[in-house]
Amino acid sequence: MALIELQEVSKLYGFGDATTLALDEVTLSIEKGQFVAVMGPSGSGKTTLMNILGLLDRPTHGPYVLDGRHVSRLRSNQQAKVRRDRIGFVFQSYNLLTRLNVLENVALPLAYRGMTPVRRQKQASDMLERVGLREREYFFPRHLSGGQAQRAAIARALINKPSIIIADEPTGNLDSTDSKVVMELFADIHRQGNTILLVTHNPELTRYAERVLYMHDGMIVGDETTAIGNMARGARKTYFERRKVSDDDIVAGVSALMRDVPGKELAAKSDSEKGRSKKSTSKRRTRKVKR
Image (spheres, rainbow, N blue to C red):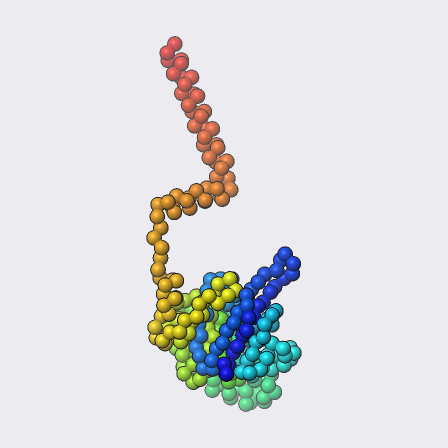
């Protein structure tokens, strides 16, 4: 049995004429222990899909089955418990609490489980050592680099020992060096048996995944199995094959720009009128010379 199963799941926002279809009858099955990358343009439904899988949102239509349990039918407090115990989140903007130091940020999820302060600080300290931040545990988030802040966020996501990690653009605010450090950490987590769902725009990051989903207009339009270490073929094709731009394309683009930019038409008319004025003045001068 698959760990995650969606059967024709849809998500609608708004009402009447303002309705937006964020997910369009998505059917998806993910096995335990898979590293799945999700790619697609902005607005394609990637984040909505992750919110539903992470029980941060409910589908409008269709069942969500997590490890054999219909979690989409659970009450809010029951979903919160499943989310706390089974799922860890890593966001692009880290979402660390600025008034807490790194150790307190990482230990925070344990407080909701009723663990004593001494035990949760010990576990948080051990987790920070795992991600290479033991010496920064009493620093505040503002004193960390982007890569350090993201590693702290990963430590917080792992503190409850979840079986599923959902990472939404975790390297979006990082440089290439910090991105590699963070992705190697995800690779290590995956090797220990965790299921990882990674949303990314970076085709290079598909090297860490064994499966890549491609989304467009709220639908999964591609599902590719790939070897870890190799860039997915679909990602390479989409992001590295550039169509040659012809002279006709350039002319069409300039014409569209002239139509869309305010004031261009008035400026063109003004230039035309100036040209006619110069011609008439020239003709009058010619007549005077002839006389």
